[in-house]
Length: 323
Ligand SMILES: Nc1ncnc2c1ncn2[C@@H]1O[C@H](COP(=O)(O)OP(=O)(O)O)[C@@H](O)[C@H]1O
Ligand code: SF4
Ligand SMILES: [Mg+2]
Image (tube, rainbow, N blue to C red):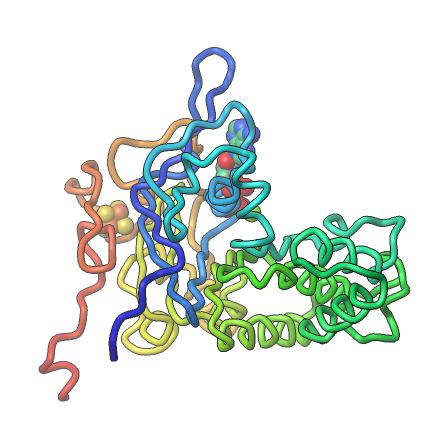
């Protein structure tokens, strides 16, 4: 099988927030990853570790006190150095479809779903004329399995699941090759999580690339091909989802801790709390919570062989696999 060129290629992406008094928040540090067509990469990690800041950096939506470094290539464009006009006109909606964390907040409350879809179709596609726009909006709704008899409703008249489908329909209008979903299942019950995730997976199978940000590991397991684990602003492990959720499991002690905290595993939370991103230690940021830590961990662990850790859980040897 030939490797396909990635849709998105992130190299050394860092984001710093500059605060009054010279304080700096290291929200994202040296992130590297690719997402290919037909692939879902799940970016997971506890709340506050920098996932949404990374998404905002890709979309050019960081506040004015943010500074970025590195590259985030989307085809011929570097998202980090593109100007706002390019991002607004050619990237957001057209080359990156954003599926938001809070669909209700993303939808305009005073307008029906049909009118919002028609407006987005008019903005992002060449479709003109009332009848053609109406048809295109209905097709857009159908792509996200939004029921046609709910198109004339306002957002507050929709259930959480249907609001999510409306937001997904809007995100799909521009036929963007990359979808970016930031916590798309927050606030949904487990059934709806499964349905939302399965619908997103269909769009991946239709050859879109999906960067799915979530702290819901069950949702990640259901949808992802690969998993990137973020801790205190850094990606500490990047591995195949099968390996991560199945055997032999992840190699980074933090990734192991996240899995062990799940109710259907040992339900044991990781002790302690993540460090302040404005006051990170020089060495491994997980050391204070890690039962494998040694003196070596006062130095920053390099990212080698899919994991950034001085003492990762050993990978199985060929003998282990044969046994
Ligand atoms: N505008 C800002 N100024 C300073 N710090 C910020 C700003 N926006 C986000 N942060 C900080 O960046 C960190 C990462 O936040 P976020 O990406 O939202 O986490 P996650 O999405 O993983 O829960 C948080 O500690 C947050 O306080
Ligand atoms: S580098 Fe050391 S402290 Fe950090 S996760 Fe690995 S073993 Fe634990
Ligand atoms: Mg977030």
